[in-house]
Length: 238
Image 1 (cartoon, rainbow, N blue to C red):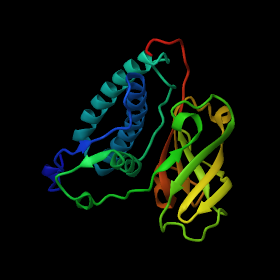
Image 2: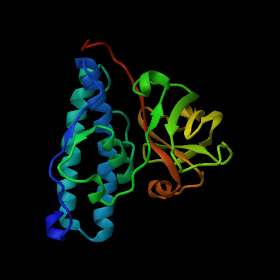
Image 3: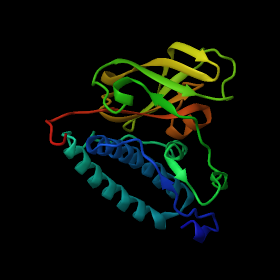
């Protein structure tokens, strides 16, 4: 598709992922697949807007395959195969930013892909966000925003969540502490209000009034932070 549109088609890279055991590997694969499912929604939307209707069928086919795959992962992890009625959406720059965290080597310069990227937003609560309790609570985050926010203040900063197909939801940061360009902070996680089962995606933003997921990108300082709330049904894999 890229070559047909005279665009750069990157050859494969090699990757390193942060897991060593079976359970951790499946858990990571499940969270990553959930995130990809949200990004494929964004891809379908973009193709439709551009009139590239011929590719929509292929993306929809991939969505189904990824859903079946993640249902298998979730069953192995003793979770309900389906997370929620409408899966959480995402945006392509968040996906690319997350992927770059795991790149080992590429046979091309990353800058050859003219795509916005963001510093990592690390979730501290719930084993790095992969096992967060199903309740209202404050979630702890950490990020190194570089020169993106140099005033060393926390006023005007928010954690913005994507969850399901809801409008992006922003909450002011609290207990915010700076160490140079590094910031540690907390923000409210409104589980009850939005029934935030399964995957939610967090971003550190300098705004809080977003109508659509794509509107968040221009105000993002660090992203994405993956938050997984698990509905457990009994252990199958250890």
